[in-house]
Structure formats: structure tokens, C-alpha cells
Length: 167
Ligand SMILES: Nc1ncnc2c1ncn2[C@@H]1O[C@H](COP(=O)(O)OP(=O)(O)OP(=O)(O)O)[C@@H](O)[C@H]1O
Ligand SMILES: [Mg+2]
Figure 1 (cartoon, helix red, strand yellow):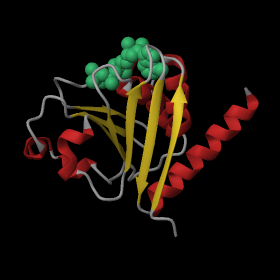
Figure 2 (tube, protein in one colour):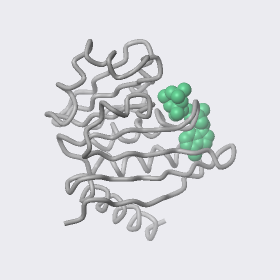
Figure 3 (tube, helix red, strand yellow):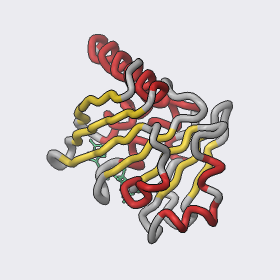
Figure 4 (cartoon, helix red, strand yellow):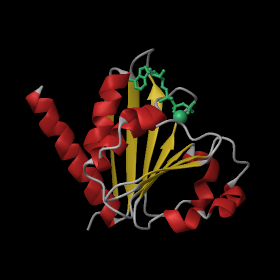
């Protein structure tokens, strides 16, 4: 059983990032936890637009940074819980919104600025770091911990390879 799995890929535009997010979204199942790390404007929300579409057909336009609400829910057969930890002073602020009830539960949880609440994340999760390489290019580094998240990340890599062959 694989307990740790890691790989890197590049995106060349925001629409490419949405497509990549969609491919990952299609591999997700209830209980998945995804932490996104990256500077302002790295592309975290952009990636989640694709993720939400791939997971449960949420229209792109409904996905925005939930900066002032902290949590946005996109309902579907598997709901997506979208958190933004940017304005939190630390993981203690999460208790007020019942963070633990959403994570690893009936839906997928995705957290922007996951590095700000690292101690509240479960050990088994997928962490994705996004770095700007140039104005329109982004490097995504994915690290999965735990069997389920490793399997999911391996399926995503296979889907990326298949999509690459088609284009
Ligand atoms: N390859 C790319 N992938 C994603 N976004 C890109 C890319 N190239 C350029 N961009 C631009 O970068 C910006 C990314 O914005 P986005 O809101 O997704 O960032 P964010 O990481 O969520 O920032 P914040 O921390 O402010 O919430 C958008 O303006 C988008 O058009
Ligand atoms: Mg954002």
C-alpha cells in the first residue's frame, strides 16, 4: 500500500488550470480533503472552479473566494465545502464554523491558504502548492498522504497523462 505519493505538473493559462481542476474533481469521492497553498493570485480559486465542475457540475461562475464567509458549499451528490483561511488568525477560529464536521465527512473539503491552519488538517489529505513561474504559467506540486488520497492522486495523474495524449 502506498502511503505517500507526490508529483508536479504545469499549467499554461487560467483556462488550462480550470481544465486540470476538472480532471482532479472527477477523481474525488466523499471524505477527500484538499489543502491549497500559494500566494495571492496563485490560482487557488481558479483551480477550485474546475474541481467543483468535475466533482458535481457546479457552474464556474458560482465559485469565488469565500473570503468573508469563510465557507461556501456547492451542493451535489458529493457536496464540495470550500474554505478560505486567509482571514483566520489560526485554526482556533475554525471551531466556530464547525470545521471538523465538514472535513473527511459526506463531501469533499477544499481549503485555500491551508498553510494557515495546518495543525487542523487531518494527516491523510492532499496538499497542493501552486507557484507562479511567469505571468500565465503555474507549477502545481501535489503531495498525498494516506492510501485513499494516494490512490486518488494516482488516478488523477493517469487522467492527466490520458488527456495529454489526446491533445
Ligand atoms: N495558469 C494560470 N492558472 C491560474 N490562474 C492564472 C494562470 N495564469 C494567470 N492566472 C491569473 O491569476 C489569477 C488567479 O486568481 P485566483 O483568484 O485563482 O488566485 P487565488 O490563489 O485564489 O488568490 P487569493 O489568495 O487572492 O484567493 C487570475 O487573475 C488568473 O487569470
Ligand atoms: Mg482565492
